[in-house]
Image 1 (tube, helix red, strand yellow):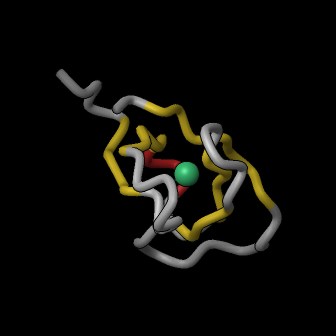
Image 2 (cartoon, helix red, strand yellow):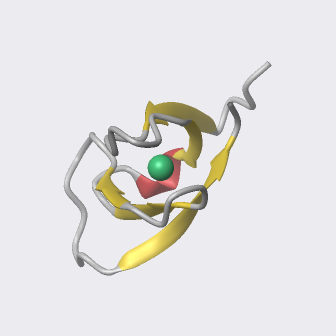
Length: 60
Ligand SMILES: [Zn+2]
């Protein structure tokens, strides 16, 4: 099952649509899908900075 410090978001790239496991610390940040290299903003509280700070792990 999913580790408690991670949650899942779906890649918005229509050619990808992979489920990504994102650290909760990445909420409000941009992450990069490792499958298609697309970047997406993780929903949640907005944190300072917009640089890509995490790389999402493809789980499906
Ligand atoms: Zn993707």
